[in-house]
Each structure stands twice: as C-alpha cells, then as structure tokens.
Image 1 (cartoon, rainbow, N blue to C red):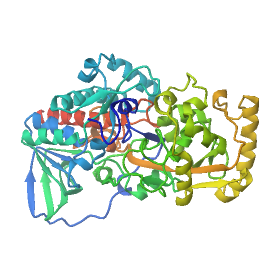
Image 2 (spheres, helix red, strand yellow):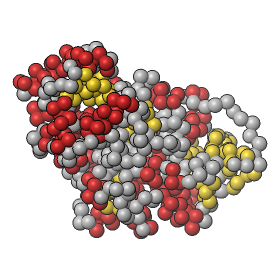
Image 3 (tube, rainbow, N blue to C red):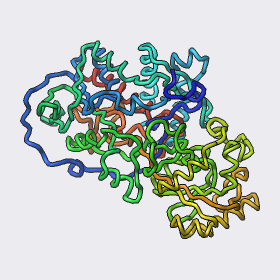
Image 4 (cartoon, rainbow, N blue to C red):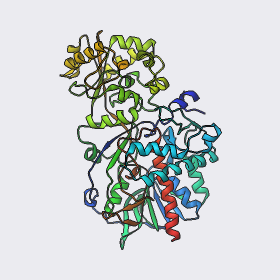
Length: 533
C-alpha cells in the first residue's frame, strides 16, 4: 500500500526518492583528517555494567543488516542505537534502492543484470571509489531486497528516471521496513539497546575490543571481538559540515536526525583515516529547498509548495549575485548529480520566472513548455502535470521570505539583492531570441525568454537528508590506518564509509541506499569470516 496520497503509479515514477535514494548531491573533498582533529577530550568512564558480545553494531538503521548477518551466523550481537526506535533512521524512510537480479525484478519480468548496473556506476565514478567494494555492495543490496521481500515488504520496480538504460530502483510501498529486519535480528537472538549513545571505542594493543556508551541509566562498557560503525554520517554536526562544504553553503536539515558524526569521530580517534569523496542526500533530485518555508516535512515532490519545482524546469538559474552559473538543462535532466553537486558549490541560488511562465505552468506541464522533447525523460516522468497552485504557492513563498517579485527585472534585482541579474537576463533573452546559447550551450528547447512581467526570484539552498562518505576502508569494510593497514576489530559501513560513495553522487537513482545497506551486509559477512579465523 502506498504511503500518504501517492498512487502506485506515482511511486513507480519517483522510485529512488529519499535519503539520497531520492535525492542526492555531492562535492569532492581532498582533505584527509588526522585522528587528533575530530575528537572530544577523553571522559573518565565509570560504567555501571559491562556487556559481553561477539559483535557490537553502532546504529540501528542500515546497520541492522550487519546485525542480521552476524546473528544469522550465530554470533552474539548487540546493536547500540541513540534513538528510541529504528523507525527514525534514513534507511527506514527512503523511497528506493538500486539493486540487480532480484526477485522483485524477476516477478516483474524486468531484466537488470548486475554487470550492467555495475558498469554504469564505474563509468560514472571513473575510478574514484573502491571498485571492488562497490561491486560487493551492489550484489549485497540485491540480497537485502530479496530478504525484505521474503519478510513481507511490498516492493516494486521503479521507472528508468534518468535514461540510464535499466530499471534498478526498487520502490518501497510498505512503510517502516526496518522493523522487519529488527524482528529478524531479535528472533535470531540479537539484542538492541535503544536510547544508548556510543561515545568512544576501546582500543587495546592496537585492536578495537569494544566501546563505551551512555545509556539511560548510566555509562555502559561493551566488550566485543568486532565493532561495526553505521552511525549515518554527520549532517547534524555543523562544524563538520563547515569543514567539508564551506561556510558559504547553508545546509538546511529537512528532517530531524541523530547523525552527528559520532562514528567517524570514534574511528578517527582509534587511528582510522578519512577517504576523499563526500556526497550528500538532498532534495535536489526533483525539487528545491528553503528552510524559511513552512510545512515542508514529509514527501517533498508532492504536496509541497510548488515554487520549489521551478529550479528544475530549465528556467534561468542564477547565484547569489544574480549571475548565471550553469547550463540549466543539466539540472533539469540530471538533478540527482548536477543539481545536487552545484548546490554544495555555490550555496544559495535562485530560479527566475516571469508571469507568462507562471500562468502557462498552471494549465500546462513543464514538459509541454519545452515542446515535449525526447532529450528530457525526467520531464516526461516527473513534470508532465500542470502546477495548479503555482501562483498561490509563489505568493506564499514571498510572504515567508524566500521569494521576491518585481514589476521589472531591475526592480526584482533590487528587492532580491541580485546586482548582476538585469545584465544576465538581457543576455539570456538574446540567446532565446537567437535560439542558441553561446554562454553555457543550453539546448534550444530549453531557451524560453523571460520578458513578461511581473518577474519572480525563488531562492534555494541545500536541503540535507544525510551526508555520505567518511572513513576509508578496504575491500571488505575494514577500517584502515594511514599506512592502509586494517585496524583489527573495526568495521565501517553505511554513510560513515568513505570508500563506496562517488562525488558527485552517482547518476543512478537509489545508489546511496544501495551502498549503505550493501556495506552493512558486507561488513557483517567480513566479521563472520574474521571471527571464524
């Protein structure tokens, strides 16, 4: 059964929405953090109890897949989670996952070989990721989908949104999937300590042998042969966001989370190192974001302010000075990669529209606006319906302070604080008249002049769902030190793993979650093999 008021057809179209399955963006970072850069001063731990286990997993989101594997193998496993439920995790709330050769695809008579999907990911990543690990993660994501199917989750195959040539995105129609995995872990003898925050790894003789955590009743010491970190990245840590994305990039948090970089910080203190690729799950996929907007929780593609969609329609986009900065077709055709990456490079940006465009879009689709061109498959799938509330929603955005209106372009530039806008619109309109863009070479179908006032500027920022990228690992999710040697007893997966995520984000929908659950599954298998010796 589909969530909310979305039809099964709409879910099929938008497969891949959500934590970075939905929407995702990325920017490359070449900054290797040292262990002494990201840790708090040591605490004098006074545990009220000691818990003995074979495996401790930190994080009850995608980390539950690691626990699923280790409990299945008979290893005594404890999951430590700071939240009160696994239902708060991004993995539980995303809309779709890339996977290949699954039972769901077979039942739908969809051919999607793993080699085809892997080749696409590698072609896009161009050697910037751990290729062997990504290969294992892609296979593992399929196993996770099959396991969820066997557990009773309702999953369907989504459409090929980006024209990649295959249908790899698995769309979740069942809400709250992770409780199914939680039940399997508990049923196999695993234990989950909720409301318990992991704080520091215990390292003895160069080996990680457990961790300290703060529980509801006091400090707890966990002793284990292996610790698997799956803490979900660092979206809630403003200092880390500033370090890796810059102070000018204002990242709005779309949803309340518990992902404060704790796993990465603990690993660094234990001697691990950062990898170089960082990506962010964002709302760039099919809509913009602005933290000033009201009522923005929930699904972001439907039922939200329709002014959020203007930036993906191929209209003129400008930066905080009013200067045009990109071929708008790149954002319209691949918001997943181009749209997301550009947000973390320029920070605030603005979509410019005129009254003619607004009036048209209330009775026609954005796909109609560009002549229903075959070069825009995303437009056909996502933007082929009128935006009947558009004028009303733009007016609401103006009242909320994230959109501006001017009777002329000069007036709009003044009220929105965009000093270069008038010259940029003039140059853009000249390109529209000529049918040729000599600035960024936007296809002619997307060159629609802005010449009938009043005019509007809609402001966007990064709408963060999660970060992706962090600790460098080997091919099997073992954390490595600065000499590239595995740190005994320490494994890193999910958004804390820095070796499986590309920058910019892969152009295949649902890949973020594939890497999150895939690294978790791989980490679980690796721990089983390592403990067996």
